[in-house]
Image 1 (cartoon, one colour):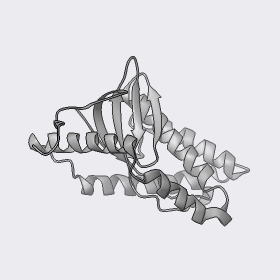
Image 2 (cartoon, helix red, strand yellow):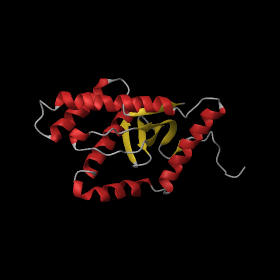
Image 3 (cartoon, rainbow, N blue to C red):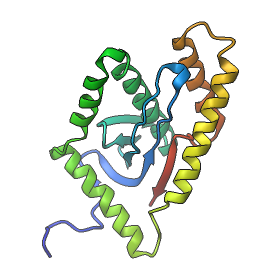
Image 4 (cartoon, one colour):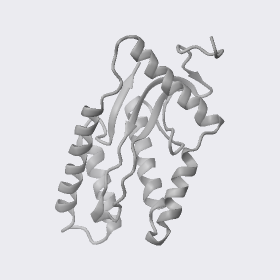
Amino acid sequence: MLYDTKMSDLKTNRGEVMGFGRVKVPRMPKLGFDYEIPLLSFITIKGEGRYIATCIHLQLDGYGKDMQGACNDMVSNILYYLRENFKYPECVDDAWENMYGLSLSNPDTGVLWDKYHALQYGFAKKGIATDRDEEANRKIKELQEEVYRLESELKDCMNTKSELWDSYLSVIAKSKPVNPMIVEEMTV
């Protein structure tokens, strides 16, 4: 064996990895956020008394008493980060550089990627497909259509982009039991 770790070792210093997935942040032109953000990968960890969802690309966490709560908190933190990162149109090149910098490998993200891949290969070993691009693309399309619908509904009753953004987040977070921005998720 080339490495001294096993695919079945899903422990991290924060707990045991229980799942992984990808998040899609939609374009929201009426909110001033008209950027094509690539799919962002995350893992979920069962820690002591709480769950942690970590976006590996942006090195952002979410916490909750259950896995779904942690994922929703992580998505909220991703949206907050992106909103602030792209706040000033004249600094958009710096915003992209910031995101790229966060996505570079380092010792912490290396461990997270190793666990992400261990889960992928573990599912594959059991004959479970983890590449569900058709399903993810369908969910992304539905999400974008929902954004456009909400933007048209809310635009008449909101005074500022900030109010529209907050209203949108509130509506979409409550719209489904599973956050619609999580386009793929698999758990052990």
